[in-house]
Length: 351
Picture 1 (cartoon, rainbow, N blue to C red):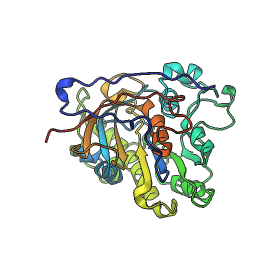
Picture 2 (cartoon, helix red, strand yellow; picture 1 turned 90 degrees about the vertical axis):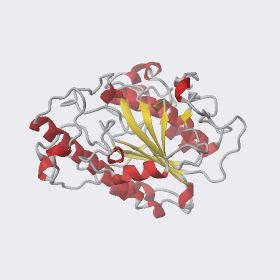
Picture 3 (cartoon, helix red, strand yellow; picture 1 turned 60 degrees about the vertical axis):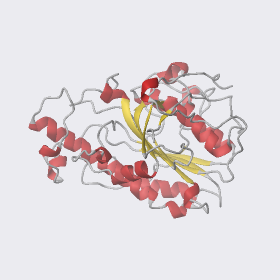
Picture 4 (cartoon, rainbow, N blue to C red; picture 1 turned 45 degrees about the vertical axis):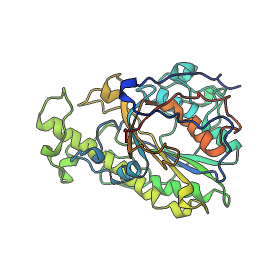
């Protein structure tokens, strides 16, 4: 039995809108001719506004930037909860964390009666899996589950790195192991859960890598000191590591399936919790603790006139509904029964 459907609202000021279009297709729309592959990437504690697409010189995120340019960049996205377990449970289930019972608590469990999109896609023929950090921290077994809610785990491959504070997991090799399990022509949904840029960092690693203190764009409210600037450069270095692995995964797209590249789906959500220090916003309902970047590709579903960077009052629980409708249309196996139907508006510049 699934958690009942919940209606929720996103509010955007009418004065800020020149055009508004619903995100979800109209009822009765046909299922897509080709079911897309889904690569979902989630970083751990990467927050707004640390990305080079917005002119931050201290961090280079070319793969993130490319996705944003080719698709749409949601600059006004906000997390359902600024905490690991609760936010990931919301993403997987399409429910507000307060509806997840023990799943709304850090180190809790996610009851099996709460349906999650990897299970629904798998029942409909998808190959599903994850590498890195899936639904975590917590123990899924007391909730009646036999595996992580993010799917089948692929974490056997490791590699020795010079920076001992970066995860040893070889994300790309684990992704390739996952692809090798697929049947010919089978669509997939894969969760790349990087452990970066979560603390702790190797002190001074950013400066040693050639980054400059003067390039740091210091958030309002932080003391301007060499120590704080250096700490943010260490943070930036781990963001770049996550971005590099993302680029390597995208480089393997030809292995994904026989689908044309235009039919492959890349969707991204960045865990919206800033580093504990110096920002001091982890698990806090402050801008750096709840606001995030969120690019999505492709952008074929967007209305004409929207630029490559659209402002969206967007919340993480919308992902399952979006995945479902991309894969099955509104007549899919869970349409109207499992997930919230969001009321979302795009901001499309006039003219």
